[in-house]
Length: 380
Image 1: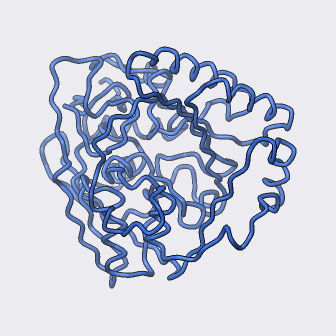
Image 2: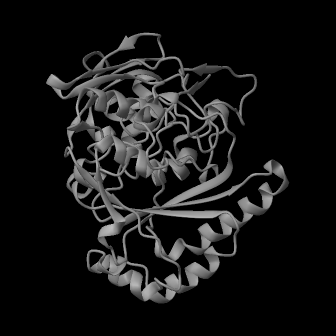
């Protein structure tokens, strides 16, 4: 059984099966109820709701409340939080998973459990341990955060000629003075309109567009991710740009860490990429002609990923679980072992992988909930 609620499934594990046939899909897209309680600074949200819908419903109740989750407004909130859920406010408030108060999950025995009934071990595991391993999330109860009534956003565009590596180093070290930010680049708006801005909607778009839900267009891409703990040398950055420009569909996104992210323990949730992380890098290579040029782009992506190995985290080379990557390892049907799953589990969760396996062994020893990179139980 494949469980679909995420909306942005990088390897399609919620709607295809590479290791078992036949299979069924449990689609949670109709579970979209959102109940916002401003007096309690909380909201109950169903797994099929998108982040955009959650943001809109919060803003409709209060201009001073928000939730620190993803910038892509078509993300399904159910799968998003199971992987951690990072966004533009994570340096201030942490992850979406760090701001969860309760949940309702259907376990392997068909019981609907809340936080008290499931126990703290399972509640810990579902807040960042990846989707599809422990049960079917029906609801999340999220903690709302206080946002300013007016927030300020900006975009500064630079070419390589305007911002070479030596300038980039200064930017990172001196609080961005080299961006050359001018008053005309900056405008003040509400939090909900900042969501639209960051998501790339045109100026003047009404927040109601967030209620449209998930897009229906098909996008072809391959993605990978890294966490960087040491400053990349200037010489290496110059070489990096040359490699980067060899592909005609590559995108890199660098997300700065620090702040609240460094103050939360690596073991507080399964998401371990905390103190000492400078930033996360997402690499994505996209194309529009389906399988025609798929092999070319995927091959290039793998080469670029290998090229970056000296500059990113090591032992393990950390990877973000919501950017699933089957290149780093895969389960083998229902007979997977702890040692086999270690290849991807340790990279996604570091030492938290061991605890996740123990939780899995307790709540789903028969491995009912499984997929190509699910958490395996220990065999008796």
